[in-house]
Each structure stands twice: as structure tokens, then as C-alpha cells.
Length: 275
Length: 183
Image 1 (cartoon, each protein chain N blue to C red):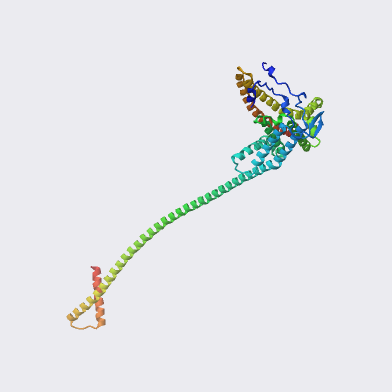
Image 2: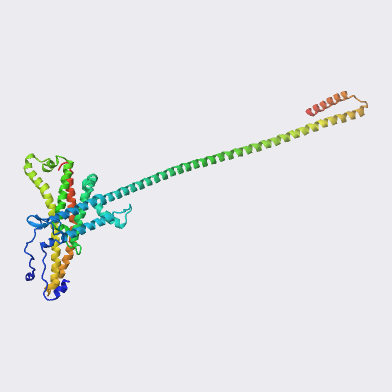
């Protein structure tokens, strides 16, 4: 379509990727609004990214609710495809780090985090969706808060009263070192954990999207607008686009794994007797 | 770069939004999606999965138990078979021994019986011979006596009463026997 449009008179200009791509127009529920940090903000606003997230969530629900219906002891091939990732999160992450008893308690949260992050990461490379639901801060932030609340709750429930003492005053440290250790522990455990969780996930997908847009926009520009020998460069950028799409697939799985396993590790540390 | 003059100017004057500042609806919908997914995994998917795993391990345990039972049964059958075989072997050996001793006994019996028979036959023959000899001897004696008396009556011409003649005959015979013995 753009080819037809540009074939007319003016060559199409280069569209560089921009941050505003992560803030598309709210097209539904523009009202009611609230004053949020000085801006008018629709409460139930739905834009393209929210829609992508809904689609990802719907696909997840569909796959897992239908996939776990009428399961057989001897699995069919389709059932194995559903069992495999569930088993990976259960055995490879939850039971492996927490043991079976505690692993079972926290399995719903860990499983939800893993698959929600994975599905919303993958939307970044799925044609027509083309943006990761996790590349906008809402989902990473909410999930980081869930992780934060989960490990705090686990620690407080397991060691009522002693959790903060264990976390802030690690045993086996000479008392005068607490002057240094305690602030470091406080910042790293109670401040940095949710921030790093949020930013690691969001920035990976954010930058991934920008890179893909850059390569494909450049390809389009070189092929159809620049003329001369530029289409040759376009072949190169297209190849990079393909490579980075594959890389984004890897990043999607890896970041989902990292988010889930860090949440599990935080819970494990909170449950541990001493740090 | 060469493309600089073709860059599209940023649209709008509202400025680029800060990607680190979440919009309210972003947080809201993210939370809603998380809660819905959590409920579905927690209440639907994971319980089904757990039920399946339990069922599967029960089936595996059942299978193992069944296999163990079958094995025990087979072992018991083998045991019975082995003992039966040993019993049968012992029985066969016993029968063989019995047969051997029986045969020996029968042989000995037969031999003994044959010997007896032979002896009996020999003894009978002896007896018969003796009896016949006796009979011949006594009849000869009577006849010789009678003949001698008849002859002597004829020679002497006088009759002798029976008692006397008998005594004479006896004496005669005794003489004869004595003569026979001395000769």
C-alpha cells in the first residue's frame, strides 16, 4: 500500500522509531478522566497496546483452559504441548528452588507471571500485533509489585517479626559492619528489587521494539524511497531485521524465565531461615 | 546522513511522553489482566494439572504394584513347580529302586521255587522208587515164600498149617537175607 502511495509523486520520508509509538491514541473510554500528575488521563482508556495485551491474555486463557480439558494419563501430542511449559515452570522453577511444599503454594503466582510475561513479550514479534505488551511500563510494574508483595508476604508469614531483622541484619556479620551492610541490604532488597525487575523487562522489550522498527523502517526507506544503490543496503537491514526478530524471540523467552526465576529466588530467600 | 532532509518532523507539540511514568489505565488494565490470569491458573489450570499428575502417579504406582504381584505369583508358581519336579524325581527314583528290589526278589523267589520244585521232584522220584522197590520186595517175598512152600510141600508131601508155614517162611527169608547180607 505504501508502495502504491509513494509511487505517485513524492518519495516517502524515513520514519524513525519514536517513543510515541508506545503511547498510541486512546480510542475507547476516553471518558471519564482523572487528573494524574497534572495530565488528563482516561481511567479506563484502551489504546492499541492495551488491546494487544487483551489479545495475549485471551490467547493464554484459551490455550490453557482448553488445553487442560479432558486430559489423559497418556498424553496426546497436543496435550504434551500444554503440559510441557506448565511442567517446566513447576519442576524447573518452582519445585527446583522452593521444594515441593512451598513450590506448590507459590506455583499459581509464578506460573501466572511466567506465562503472562512470555505471552506479552511474544506479541512483539507476532505480525499485526508487532508490539510487546510488556514494553509499556504498566505490566512490568504491576508484576514487579506482585513479586515484591509475594516475597514480603512469604517472609513475614514464615518468620513473623524476624523477617526484617533477618533481611537487614544478616547473621555472622560483626555488629559495626551493620552500619554499612544494613543500608545496602535495605536498598538492594526493598528498593532495588522491584525497580530492577520492572526496568529489566520493560527496557529489553522497549529497545527490542525500537530496533526492529529501525531495521524495517530503514529497509522500507532504502528499498522504495532512497533510490540508487541504497536497495543493496536495504538487503542488509532486512537481514538484520530477520536476525533481530529471532533474537527477540530468544529475549522474550529469556526475560519471562528471568522474571519468574527472580521472583522465585526472592521468595526462597525470604523463606530461608537465615540469609 | 543523506536522509536528514527527509526526516519526518515530530508530530504534535505535546512533547514525548516519559515511558517510565505509567498511565493510570495502563496500571489498571495490567492489574485486571494479571488478576484474571492468576485466577484462571490458580483455580482452573493448575488444579487440573495437579489432578492429572496425581492420577498419573497413581496409575504408575498401580502398575508397579500389579507387576510386583505378577512377579510374586510367578515366583510362587516356579517354587511349586520346582518342588513338584523334585517330588516327581524322588518318586521316580523310589519307584525305580522298588522295581529293582522287586525284580531281585522275584528272581530269587523264582530261583528258590525252582530249586524247591527240583528237590521235590527228586524227592518224589526217590520216594516212588523206594515205594516201588518195597512193593516189589514185599510182593516178591510173598510170592517167593508161597512158591517155596508149594515147592517144599510138593517135595515133602505134607501139608503144613498156615502158622507153621508162615514161621518157616519167615525163618527162611531171614536166612536168605542174612545170607544176602553176608555174601
